[in-house]
Amino acid sequence: MMMIMKKTHIKKLVFTLFSLFAFSCSSDLDFNQANELLLEPVIVANLTYFDIAAPQFVTNGVENNLLFDAQDFDVFRDSFFRDNLKRADFYFEISNTISRAYTINILLLDKNDQILYTIPMTVPAYTGSENVVKTTEFFENNKLALLKSTKRMAFMLTMAPGTPLTANSPGNLKLKSSATVYLEIK
Image (cartoon, rainbow, N blue to C red; front, side):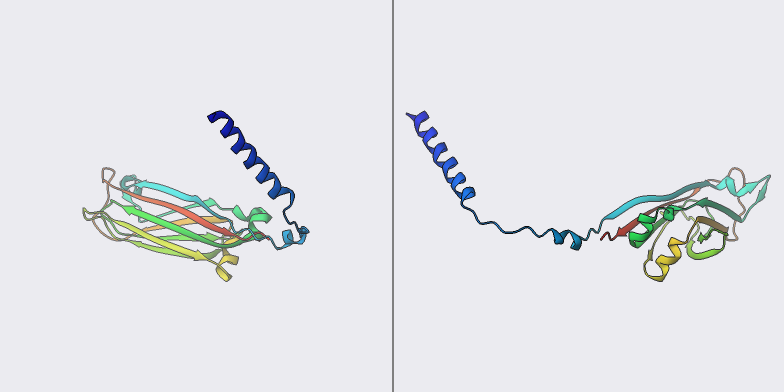
């Protein structure tokens, strides 16, 4: 008895659904809507990283108060990415456990190693408690055009005066960073 009742309900449900689909309204498809399609993906990626131990600021017993390193940064060689990029946010976080203060300049360089833009950061000396400096640099409009011309990214670290470092000095200067890019694809 229960089995017959279930089959009857299922038959009625299938008939009702079929009736709805068979007699439903339809309209002409507008394929021109595809021309109005706008995609706005947001991508987050690691940008760069370094970890410099205090003894790396000492060469042959002599303290170096300036370090410079440059790396290729030709992410805009791809025309699709370059043409559809509408904004980029660069996030930098520097942790210092060295008992010296630093000025860090992140330099965006063109193909001739000319400075297009500088992101300055001042990092205080480590005094025993957490020492983290964070900054976000936003690139849009004219600044975005400068970023798109960047071919290399350089880091110039200048150590402030203080207690001299030795080959046995403790601590590290660590930078980690990320980029959030906003695309607009039409």
